[in-house]
Amino acid sequence: KAGVTQTPRYLIKTRGQQVTLSCSPISGHRSVSWYQQTPGQGLQFLFEYFSETQRNKGNFPGRFSGRQFSNSRSEMNVSTLELGDSALYLCASSVHGTGEETQYFGPGTRLLVL
Amino acid sequence: SQELEQSPQSLIVQEGKNLTINCTSSKTLYGLYWYKQKYGEGLIFLMMLQKGGEEKSHEKITAKLDEKKQQSSLHITASQPSHAGIYLCGADKGYSTLTFGKGTMLLVSP
Image (tube, rainbow over all chains, first blue to last red; front, side):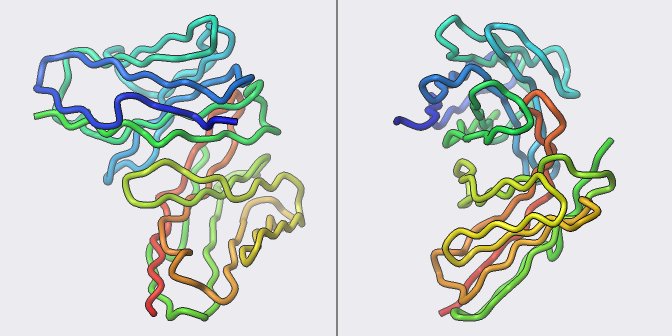
């Protein structure tokens, strides 16, 4: 079974631009979670989607948004990029998103904002 | 909110030596995950612990969750260069939401 895939792997943007990142979960997984990883803050939860519905959201500004499609693929969007948005963005998938399941992570998208 | 504290922050061990990484929670743990990360890459799932007193092993890595479910330890026996990386513990908060510790960076010297 193919693992979680994320595209693109690397991205360079300038302040004020917007960016869209994509995540394809493991086949059969319906829950997709997004995380931001920075040296200062570590790994922080952004949001989680299950069956096209956002069930949980972390403490991030409204510039960060996401969605999930009927095939469980998910995208996250960051508008009006700031320098501090430079980070590794990771997505993870699980079957139902319950606490008894393992979340499998993708390789991440590294975003650099100049 | 729940916080996870990992110790040590980093360690260097000689190849062949044993080591232990600790993860302490400010609240009761209902699901504790251990992941390994190579710098700048995704997280590799190691183990998940749910029950107090539970212990799991995979190859040379053993993880335990204490009876009170507020601390977990990860023990590596006879470390190898392939064990080098960042070890992260994560606590389940429901709906596939994990809160993570800051990580422990492990270097294995030959």
